[in-house]
Length: 239
Image 1 (cartoon, rainbow, N blue to C red):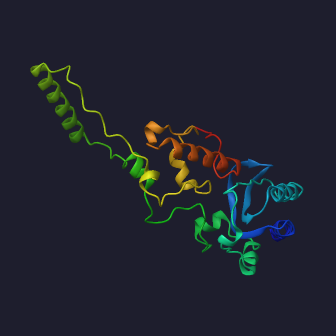
Image 2 (image 1 turned 45 degrees about the vertical axis):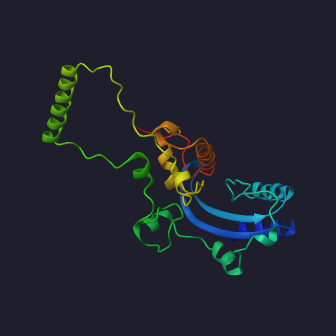
């Protein structure tokens, strides 16, 4: 890890770039096998640089045997370096070069470090807000009440003869990202993106999720990026 971080830092500083943030997410179980590896250590670099610097950094990563996959994302264009505050320090760089805890250690409680892919307790429940709460199974008495109520309603309609009356349409779903600016679409947030993927690995359509066209496209891009980094699988396998 230290060798990869040192090489990336050398290339960025030699190319006139500025490092904004360096983070080590620890050893994670990959969503699928990459170069015969089932686990990998995720390293995150945020930096300012030109297009030529990105190509040079990717060339060096490609020549490094310990790097099994890399992915570059352009955040913004024509950024003023003076307007961006850097979180990079020697202490953070040394900490990022230290191997983080394993996913199994986090699950068993042996490691105190928190996984970046875990959800915060008490955070916004996206599943309940978009798709509603989980329905409890109806007991026999409740099921009979539902059937009797439906039968009684049908009898009333038959007696009144008002079958051609239009039924009221359901309330249209609203985009939760438009209503809450605190919700951000991020390819690193697998806990949020999983609600927009079906059991077969397909993207949930807008008519079910309620997303607007803009945020639906952003979700599609974030899911593709997460799949490229083995954070999310391309397809769900197994029964």
